[in-house]
Image (cartoon, rainbow, N blue to C red; front, top):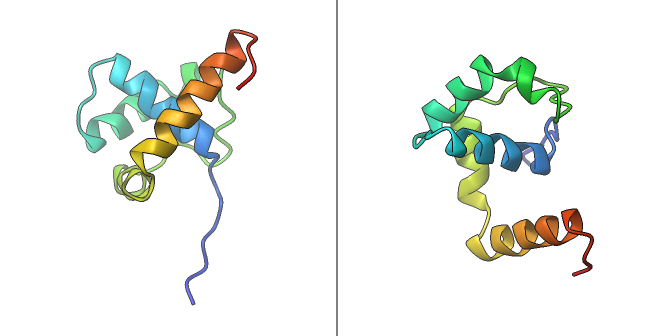
Length: 86
């Protein structure tokens, strides 16, 4: 039986990837590098209790998430920020 440790919040992983992509990161390694280079900035918005994930971990997590899940939850987050309900 494989034990999964929840060291990172999914919302923070998504935020890290989002910020990195806004900065033209296109590869998983670029996302990790972005996170490490901008960790101080990111901590203004994210808790990051266990630091920046490795590019392999980020890739594995996104491989498990369906595009439909991402779309639904990004939309939900945008609506929440704009004060609208789902």
